[in-house]
Image 1 (cartoon, helix red, strand yellow):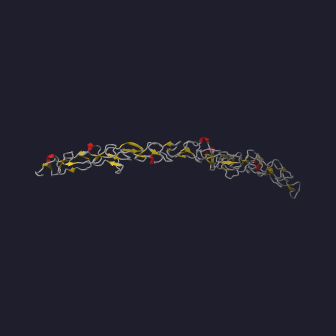
Image 2 (cartoon, helix red, strand yellow; image 1 turned 180 degrees about the horizontal axis):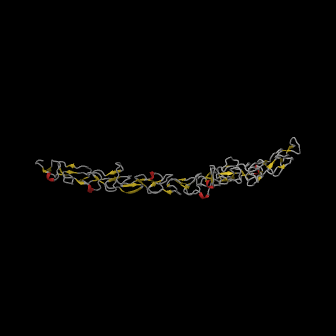
Image 3 (cartoon, helix red, strand yellow; image 1 turned 180 degrees about the vertical axis):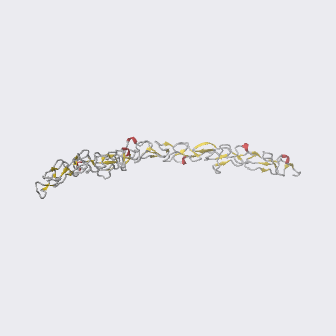
Length: 458
């Protein structure tokens, strides 16, 4: 580290000059120049290697040069055993004195494909629609995730900070690689967040319409006289006007068929008209139908109402059951018409609702004992003298049984009457008096031989 410039010296002359080294027995201050890639401060015994961040590109340097901007100088990567500046790799920047290639990476959200950057300001922000999820990137990591959008310098595929991007807002959708949210078009809407495709934008709710872009909910209700089955962009879609026989109040998703008792003969209507009296209107009726014979139709009738049992009518357009007529004698009436004669064995005086009445009142009933009733009978006919109706419900005189001998039967009787004294009663012939000049003191006699000659003086 020293040199001796003359002879007979008691001590070294001085230290070697900077940029030179003196290993020993040197006579000059500049004895051996320091080689490239090293430096030699004053009094150096041997050259020193430049540390990382520095370099030496010439001989006789007393100190290393600071590694220049845009380069790094690493003693771990020598060239011919010499530390030399190397260009900063893409994705990194190298200020003065950079010690190794990857010391200063472009930060998260940034990238750069060019070498020799000198400052982080030269790193490019990740472009819109992409993200840069690592430090030191040459190129973006990839596209922004579906359901999110990336406005620039995004550090992750699904940013949530609202600065470099966010989750896709309501009323919008964000396909992969979105730089901004895309609005759901009219006729569609989306009430949540994170929609990924247009298909996530749902059709507008039935009964409503969506006329704007980017709707979270619907714009308003479907107009009265129209219906909106879903996915409509106007309140009055002409393709979906309310047809005849239906009504469409506001917010209708589908036409509502006019209920029974109402009708509608026009399109584009919000309500149905009440069916007038004397007419009936089934569900979905376009026009009222006149009330038919045998029925009546008060206001609001969905169907004709038959005249009450036991009554009829031959007129159309009745409005009240009191307009129906009582069923005539000997007939029975059902569902508003005269059906036929009542059955034999029964009486139908008036207002009969069945062919075999058992009313047991003034309207009729079963043919009584001692009588017979042909079909269509209004009043029972008594069995003829000499015969007897032993049971109810007889149809003809032939069913009346002959009165047995010793008894007689009147037309009003329901049981045979014992033949009285003075009379005789042949079978089925009624009672007969004994002829003049005879008498008969016994009951139940059946022929004239029972009559005895009168006693003398009687």
